[in-house]
Image 1 (cartoon, rainbow, N blue to C red):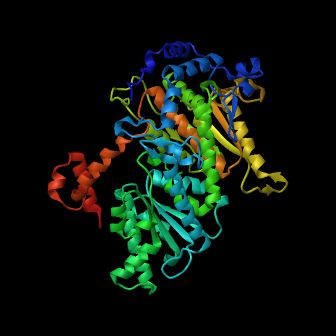
Image 2: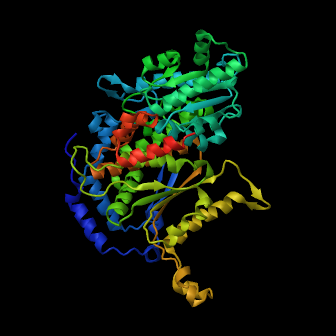
Image 3: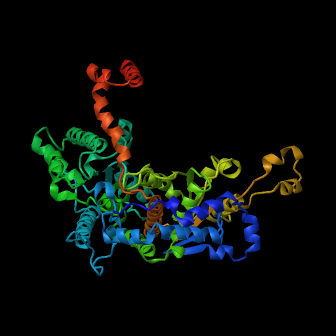
Amino acid sequence: MNTPIDVTTTDAWRSLRADAESFEPDLRGWFARDPGRAERYSHTVGDLYVDLSKNLITDETLRLLTKVAEEVDLPGRIAAMFAGERINATEDRAVLHTALRRPKDRSPALVVDGQDVDVDVHEVLERMYTFADQVRSGAWTGLSGKRVRTVVNIGIGGSDLGPVMAYEALRSYVAEDIEVRFISNIDPADIAATLAGVDPETTLFIVASKTFGTIETLTNARMARTWLWEQLARRGVIGTEPAERTNAVARHFVAVSTALDRVADFGIDTDNTFGFWDWVGGRYSVPSAVGLSLVIAIGPQRFTEFLGGLHAVDEHFRTSEIAHNVPALMGLLNIWYVNFLGAHTHAVLPYAQDLHRFPAYLQQLTMESNGKGVRWDGSPVPTDTGEVFWGEPGTNGQHAFYQLLHQGTRLIPADFIAVANPADPRKDGHVDVHSLFLANFFAQTRALAFGKTADEVRAEGADEAVVPARTFPGNRPTTSIMAPALSPSVLGQLIALYEHITFTQGIVWGIDSFDQWGVELGKELASQIAPAVTGDEEALAAQDASTQALIRYYRDARR
């Protein structure tokens, strides 16, 4: 790739810096003086209604942010990604997660390095759909002939966060006779809790690891295999012969991987292995074979709708000019807050309980992508990058951390997400509970934007001594995202929205948003330290004094 443009040297960046130095947010005044503000700053993308009007922006701010995007050639970088250029510079790879959701027989075909990517993607999808139908219909059975009732996905990072988030979000679409569980943490407590009460004869394990070498995933897979053998032997389904154990693994394990030799060594039939490609980063992989557990849970038709939602936002991002490009605008707003107004974190607050894992999913997407200190050519970044994403669903957060949002000294931009139609409509007497729930959604963004003045507090009859404590400064920025319902398509749209927000920020900062070298050092050191933990004195002596003391404490305390 070309040397990234130093955004801090652009005319638009210098203008934004000057604007920020004298910037005085006044959401109350802006709305009062501009009756069209809400309409002008609200956008539709797919089924999503996105209201940006309660952000700390003026028309001039947006004009300058749009100019920043143009000066770093965001449109050109978008085109390069969708065309399959090798924009993952440090790994010399294309970035084609968007190809995972292109419709079949799209014209023109996407051909990269002489390979028809569309054909490759849909071949794997068809295999996934065929297998999922077999499991859902009962045609695929365990060793004893019983149909699958529980699917256990074993993965970590993107091979876990994406599937578990989507499964939880789409629980109302899950087949009634199938449950999906997830194992990710290498802590034995995770596998113990996940397998508690599970019937081994009706359980299918999906081991998701591109290289089939991820230590956490393979350790958990081996423990699951041992559990299966022991449980089936206890029931008399298998004996101790190696062939019986091999047959058990073949009927109860499938893999998502490209390392067929390692899959075969584990005992999984390579015919039951679903591959993907090096141009799919883990945090972008849920639309790939990594989503096999989700396909089994909700069925091929619903998964196709999920892919359609992703593709709808992809097309909006690819074809819309920056001034009307919703993911680009939201990414540029994050740049404004991080680089000009001093924000360090970003809250994602879904007023939809089924999205309770969405903030955790976004943590990997955003922080693994943009938590970088060098640009894609290896030079230091000239400005701050990244922000800490966090959040909790609905009114739970109101009773936990909203105090800081409303009256704290930190600037914390927040995205509020809600749907009009709940999966489980309920009434409390004559009160529609979802309407009550969303009243909180509307109230919180209003309170954060407009606050409450000291005079308003006094007018309520408050004692003067408590007026300062009961005053809300307002001017706390929020974006509101609404949809008709949390359907597979809408979930896909939300995922793609944040993928492209993340991409936009990475391009402005000039960083490679698609590598993740920062996760490697700790894994390398863990493999070196492991012998010291288990008694190797020479390995222990090679550690620093603090690590030595911690390991000695562990070894002494371990019963």
